Amino acid sequence: MTTPMVAALLLALVLGAGCGAPVAGLYPPRAGEPTVEVWVVAHGWHAGLAVRMADVPADAWPERSHFPHADFLEFGWGDRAYWQHESPGIRLALDALLRPTPSAVRVVGVRGPLAPAFPGAEIVGVRLSHAGFARLVRFVDDSIAREGEGAATPLAPASWPDSRFYPARTTYHLFRTSNTWTAAPPPP
Image 1 (cartoon, rainbow, N blue to C red):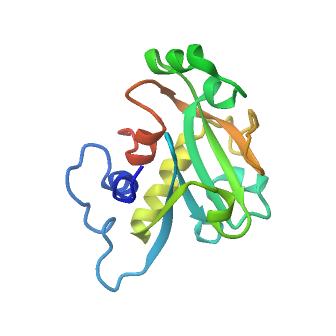
Image 2 (cartoon, helix red, strand yellow):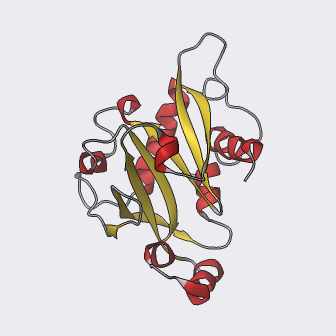
Image 3 (tube, rainbow, N blue to C red):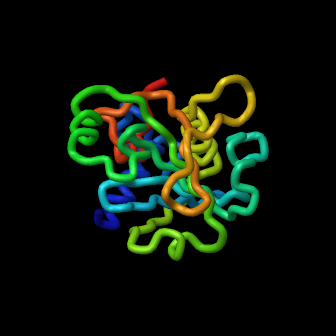
């Protein structure tokens, strides 16, 4: 995935579902306006969103308590069975693509800089307005399926160090993959 493609994915996220032009006050930020930097992490076929833990409001994402020493959280989304399987194979891949299947949000807690935590990944920073960042926080929060007010129960540890999978609200299929999740949230 090229740098312009990764930046376009995040830009599409802040434009919102169905919008074809920048949304005033969200992206791009106005000249001189305070901004918050977020990162798109391209892992080959998969893309995720990373945020600095200190930038996230204390009342957002109850799952953050599972990562007490993280400086950053990277969020990804994908087919639940395929993503959690050690050797998923072609059957799970076809199943994930050809019919709507349950999905999961993977959260990786990163201590220190992002690049050493994701060797080989392309990482692109994008500055959002505070309103755009708040919208991103709500989008990620709304992606995680929770029972009650507390943190979601992890499904399983993920293969990355200090990572967990959580149940997600939407289904995965050919037209709703990790890259489309990263690029544009579904309509409300």
